[in-house]
Image (cartoon, rainbow, N blue to C red; front, side, top):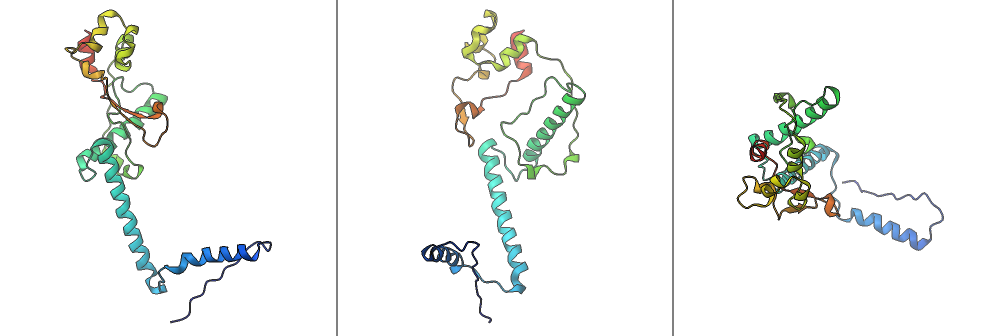
Length: 206
């Protein structure tokens, strides 16, 4: 076949001969093991690369969903659960800023978001909110404070956070996982604690 050539041009004329040599060697090294493709094979090569990239991308997402949330990426029902909940969250925020609270009791039931590439065909989700009622002040505090802050609550409620026989003792774990999730400081971590069950909480307080 025809000879292949690599032409190297430099913008600066002030480089020393030694520096020029090093630069040439770096450029040539890139091409030592490079695969030479005929023009007729470029399209097939690009398709092969696309498929390889897509396979790695899917594997990365599978690892993310399973490792972070124990969700099987190949399970449509589980994937619809997280994607549908995320879209509900977007709708809740839009309602909040434009129309007011759409639901007092709604919450996003996952510690992590879905990947943006999985947000498609969203019209399949029928999003309906139930208004409910807002938490009363002490109900709200019982839903967000840890056991170590129990003194901020009336004494009648404090035992619910520490008594082993409390019907909601699982809301206040003493040990839990912190996922740094690429962050450096503890306060930036994802805190993997259970979500509050509103009905159980209010029932216990009553």
